Image (cartoon, rainbow, N blue to C red):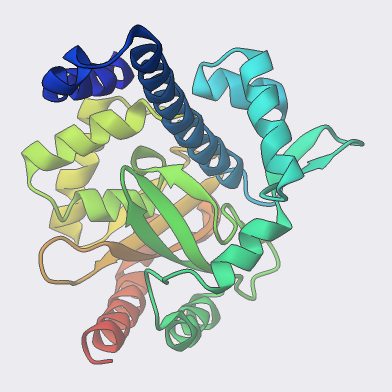
Length: 287
């Protein structure tokens, strides 16, 4: 519907010129407009498909799963994937039938504008969290209604819970880091973002919206986000937001097995996360 409005708006604006056109010229102009609209739709679908592939990190996704998540016919998704593979933006493994982000995307990333230019300076801060806690530590970033993992650092404990790879993303409602960032918003905005994130593919949380909103209240009272077994059975996590002008867009989180992170341990974990968040904020605010 929206795509069709563009040509109609142009026709209205160019009405005097259209009246002077021959039938053949008018037909040619409308054909160009339709192709432009179709090309824009194809580009948008390709970008969304790349986003979905990226959400699976290094694991990859099948054609069927991608088609189901985008709610598009298999032939359409197969055609777009074919173009992405030919341009090396996507990679297809014939043995596993899985699609992953391709090498050309990596090449583009080398010269892309970084959303966080000082990532190399921040990485040692996250590594220190992993050392002090023995658990897997993360730097997570808000992007639209999702959380993207920027840094992943495993701790020294023999049982590791590496639940999200660098570059992978999760819906806000599926991440304890997302919970920390939702808690930094007012109730109305948090509710809107929460509802949008619940409609995204790959939602795994078993909590209802009212239960998440209660978790947000608890996060504000406690000073850090915490949940146990909410998304992945047997895995617990904690997170704090990194202060920033306006709404925070970064959070520092950790994950471990539930036995290692009972509520009683949060009093020891909170100072470690808060100190790391302050150091990250200092790096960002004082380049």
